[in-house]
Image (cartoon, rainbow, N blue to C red; front, top):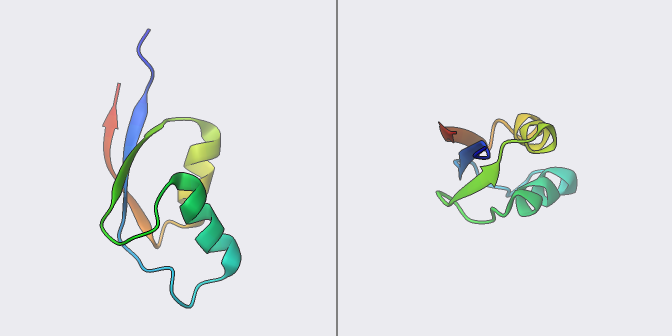
Length: 63
């Protein structure tokens, strides 16, 4: 069975954001504008994306 993945793109800057939001970006593997990461679609990753939804967007869902 193939694992479900999502492609997340950073669209917002972490400048002047709380340290917790910057740490969440780093936890997702993002740190510079317009970078993308393919991550496993788990509830924890979805929660991280939801907590900083103003700085990231889900580009694609695979699987």
